[in-house]
Image (cartoon, rainbow, N blue to C red; front, side, top):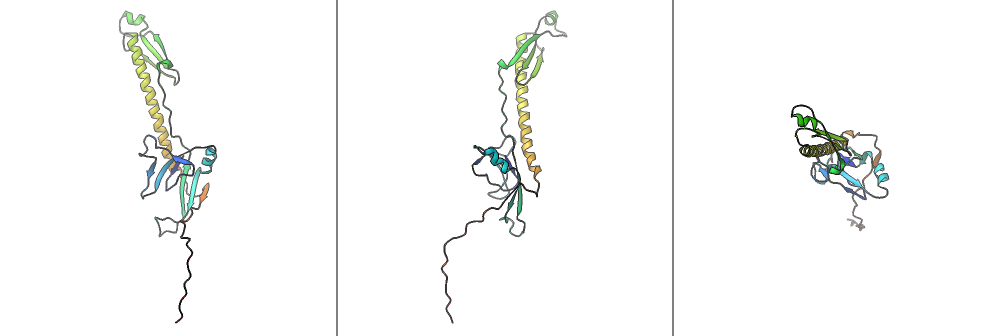
Length: 205
């Protein structure tokens, strides 16, 4: 779950998750003042995690005087909390998942190249990516190139997916609507000294 912008604390029973690729280092984006955060990632775990997260999803309103703006009468402060994807599973590449078929190639290269199945058509079954290589006259060399190209394309696809997820997390900040909150919180005031005061008497003059 992404919380931002504004100061926010992790709900009980939750833990912050390290930021994804492209995020600032660490589990949060620090605010302008000590002890504040502009954005945090929180991972909630447990039997009632889904219901708990749903109760904290949407625009949240904190109603309290600001310790940083003593001269203002504003007491409503808004943040937004939305579920977001953090972890992107990496595609594991193994040759066992690749179907390799020899095929004939056209163009220059001599009679042997035109008649023999020296070109390679390689298909990665989990992703459906297909490459055809006919740059070399030997089947084994084309096969080696095809496997390398498949691996590179799969890694590139994973990187593109990670960037898309990171961009989606950042767009949550733009969804903040000030007003009509789904939840309103009244933070407790700091505990005052509970020591009983001994009454004093004034002397009459």
